Structures are given as C-alpha cells and as structure tokens.
Length: 387
Image 1: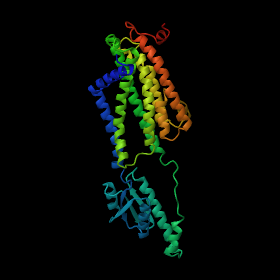
Image 2: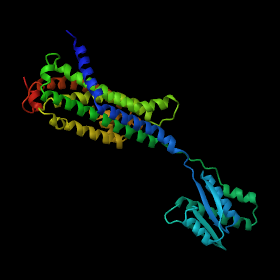
Image 3: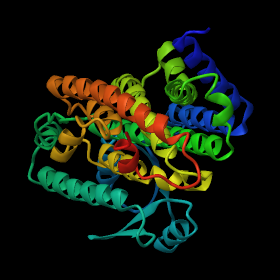
Image 4: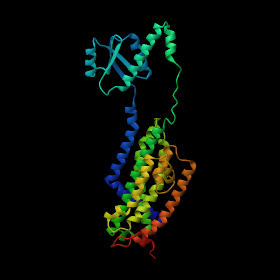
C-alpha cells in the first residue's frame, strides 16, 4: 500500500501531465515570457538618447543672438543647426514645409519667431530666453563692459539639482506589473482547480478515484499540481529578468525586491486560494457553476490587485498587506516601493502560513464531505454542520 505522500505525488503528477498536454499552459507561459522579454529589451532599444537636434532658420539676427541660442540649447543637452534664410517669406516656407523646427527673423529692433501652431513649445521658450540674453549682452556691452565681465555676470552661480526619490516611478511600475502578474496567475490557477474539481464530480470520476486515494489526498494533489504549473508560468516570465541580471544588465529600481517578495507570497497565495477554490467547487454539481462558487474569492483577488497595483503606499494597503487573502498581491507591491516595514513583512508571513494551515483543515473537511454528495448544489453551512 502506497503512503499518503506518495498518493499526493501521484495525483499532482497527473494534474501536471494534463496541464502540459493542453495548449493553455504553453500559450500563457509564452505570453508571460514574451511580455517579460519586451519589458527587459524595449527600454534599452527605445530609451536611447532623449536629446534632440533642432534646425532653426535665421533671417538677419544679430550674431550674439545666435551665440546665445546655441549656448542655451547645448546647455539643455540638445543640438542646434542654424539655417540661413534669404527673407521672412523664405523662413515661413521652411517652417511650413517642416524643413526647420522654427525660424527667427529680425527687422531692425523687431524680432519674430515663426513656428507651427501648437508645436515646439520648449524650443520657443529657449529662443525667447536666448533673445532676452542677447539683448542684455548688447546693453551691457553698450554700457562699456568687456566680454569677460559680461560673461561673468551671465554665468551666475553653479546650480545643482538634487532629485529626491529619483527611482520612485520605476518602483511604482514594478509594483503594478507584479501585482498584475500575481493576480493573473492566481486567478487562472484558481479557475482551473475549481473547474477540474466540478468536472470530476459531475462526471462521476470521483467514484473511480476515491477507492484509490482519500478525498484529502485528491484535493491536496490537485492543489500541488496546479500550483506547480502556475509556478512554472511565473518562472517563464521571470527568466528574461534573471538572464538580464546574469549578464550584468540594469534592472528597474525595485524590480529585484519585488520578484523576491513575489515568489514567497505567490506560493502562500497559491496554496490558500487553490485549497479554498477546490473546496468551494466541491459544493456544486455542475462544472458551469464552478465560477459562481468561487466568485467571492475572485472579488477579493480583484480588490487586492487594485490596492497593490495602484496604491501600495496607502494606509489601507498597510492593513491589507498583512491579511492572508490580500497579502499575496499587496505585500510584494509594498516591498517594491519600499513602503513595507520589517514588522509588516513578518506579520504577513506568519498570518499567511497560519491561514494556509487553517484553510487546509477546513477546506479538506468541506471537500471530503461535499465531493461524494451529488444531485444538487450544497451550501457551505450545511456541509460544515454535517455530522
């Protein structure tokens, strides 16, 4: 006679083989891997250099104005090319045909900027600044100041910009992506377990399996198998990240901590949700009703995903990051943005483990009593109070 754990292993292996024979696992794993690869590669390909190269047509502007414009544009990290235009009409044509970004035309003391409506607002501001600086330089020189004195007055003090929480945006993006991924994986695995349990009950497959393995073994074998499949899908998504990390690539700030936390809480969440889903699905008599049976769990998952993905630093997320049913999505997101304290992390882990133990006892009881009763949909209270 085989042992209890050997029976669990056999049932889990059966669930894994069934999943591997289906297309849904391979499609989901491929989509996760492709999405993760795109997130790792596209920022490198598309991020590139944010600096721009401007072409500006000029008509009879003072040399000092051109010098100031070039200096200001280069100080902003961009490049400037001046194009001489014979007349204002020629400058208008160049702007209208998008051959230059804008044009500057001088007629005595009158200077105009020609630009397409609603475009190149940043360059217009730089040009205004350059023209104002050129006018100031001219006035200072007319007042008798030398070039060195003018340059000293214009240079001003060295200004240093200290950015606080410069990586906050990337942390928030990591939190959102992780919460979304964990929600998707848990939801798919939960739906699969529920549908499988309901199908085997409605098709009387349980009558064949129960003499071979007790109900608790069947439930936990299904949970273990479905959890292994979901974990494989998660690893498919994490593989490109690990590859990039292995070759020395730069990862978005917070993504490493988010992944580490995500694996731990995903395992806790998978155990908790899959046990509960299997137990609730045992109450129904038709596969079509399995989605309704786990409806409350789906609602909790959606709420947890919204909290973890959009408001991981909020006070309410601090509370739900500790509660077992919501912590699998909320706590990794809080870790990613650096909002979780050590006490919260420990409390969340301890409560998560206790919840899994409690769910295993109660869920196993419900499954054992409900899986053999067919003919109608059972109520949870009825099963729990059954002698």
